[in-house]
Length: 124
Image 1 (cartoon, rainbow, N blue to C red):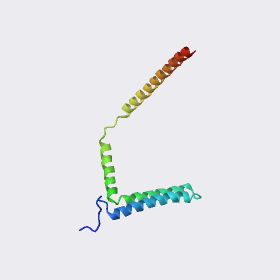
Image 2: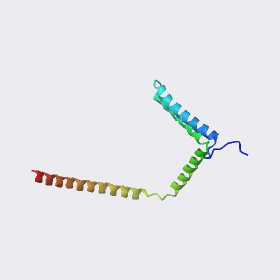
Image 3: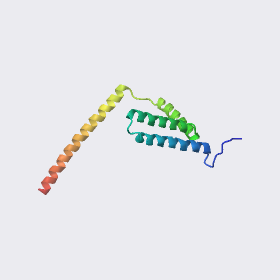
Image 4: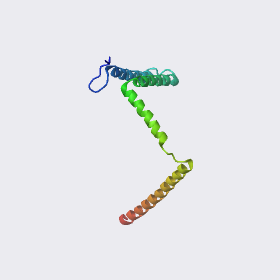
């Protein structure tokens, strides 16, 4: 028998406490960042990062956190499966986009000049 009690949604009471504590630590880090405004930004930023890392570590011990970590692992595996373009292919595609943007810009500029000329001719 399990010592953890789960509600109908499948979230244990301990997980809820951990999630609330993580939010409290994150909030305390943000409040501390502004409360200690007289101190160096380096120390305040380190405190904020520390609170965030601690909160993330606390969340990762919950069921939802483990699910999220599993999702990140699977995403990383899928990214490794992608066939990325070579440097030459990426450069060629970038140059094509730049050229297309240039020509569309010129076309729109000419169209604007034509419409401006037509409207000034009509309205006199």
